[in-house]
Length: 176
Image (cartoon, rainbow, N blue to C red):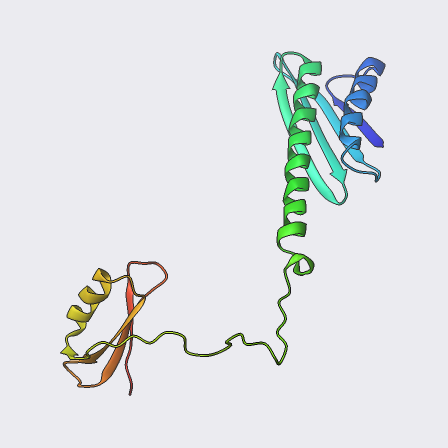
């Protein structure tokens, strides 16, 4: 673990250095690789400010805390860094498990299989009458369908009205 401690308007004593090193050991449990930690301590008015930044596995984490006690600031920073590291680690683990192709179930069909593939499985019949675009829009809103085929009363051509992804607006497919 590489730790660099800088004091601005405040001297980094041996006790503070040992305390930071001791607390930063908590971060080592999240990785087997080398950790680079930079600690900056300073005073602002009556408060003691501790700023810790860590480079772990190529990810940068940073915490800044201002308290009356410098040791309390360091403790809070370590807690914040641990939370950030845990969050990143959990996020990466989730991506590795759920988004991975290797974990997806492979379904194979042989030639003798009786499974139906690429076939029309459902047919719906309904009467197509000349309808105004506004009436077709109202019919589509009342139904649970995503689209509706109708004969446009103005042009006498077959049109398709469909709901857009926003769920509010509509689109129309009209032949030339």
